[in-house]
Amino acid sequence: MNQPLSYVGFILCLVLITICFIAAVYLSYRKSSRLRDMVQFVISPKDNLLLDFKISSIIKTALWFILIHVSITVVYHFTDLIFYSESADTNIGDSIQTLPLWVVLIMPPILEETAFRLPLKRKRLYIALSCTAIMFFVSAIIFSTKVYDVTWERLLLCAIIALTAWFYGYKWVSKVNFKTWLWILVLSFSILHIINYDLSTMDIGGWIRVILKEAVKIPSALMFCYVRIKHGFGTSVALHSAVNLSAYCMGALV
View 1 (cartoon, rainbow, N blue to C red):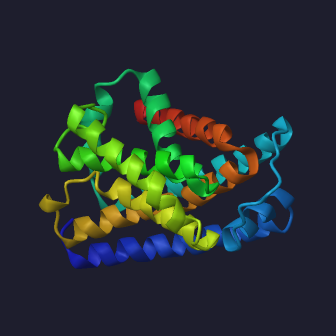
View 2: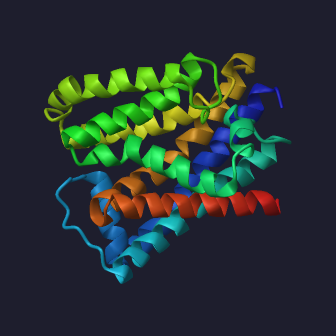
């Protein structure tokens, strides 16, 4: 659809549905202590939450995560389907399709969690690993390769960034307010997914559509941050893998 009114209607529909969703979450918020804890973290994030590795506690968090993530995703894609006849294709699609399923379920979660959630605990090693993982993604654009194709040029650039982050990155990050640092990582997570698209072939409507699609990932990114701080890095990787598996299964069914 190329008419400007279609894009306005698309945005207004999303806004209306979002308001309804927030209202539903608010009603649940009053009854669930875990949801209140998650919302409080988003409003006033802290990096010193008491670690909780109890299975029952992790399950509670995971259930709320899945409920919110799936609700937002389904609502967005349903709205998108109303206004568009086909989904927006990403450049990463061909790269993913050539990989075995087990690699898809392991490599992206580990790399993305390392890049955007591991450094929430601000240690020198974590900052260096995060910058290395981010550069691994960015280097695919710089050298015009598929995301998961490993070349010596990309490895060399990642090594240079790792050393730079080790000696200089930690000093800067350690001085940044935690809330600011968290939002830098959350927004970077969404921006990284935007560059998966070939924006040069899109008009302004296509740009808006892609930005909205990736902005929908922000609530999930915030919840991943909560999981990383509350339940540990391994739990956030496992949950990320489970989310990818569910998306893969839904895609196969559709």
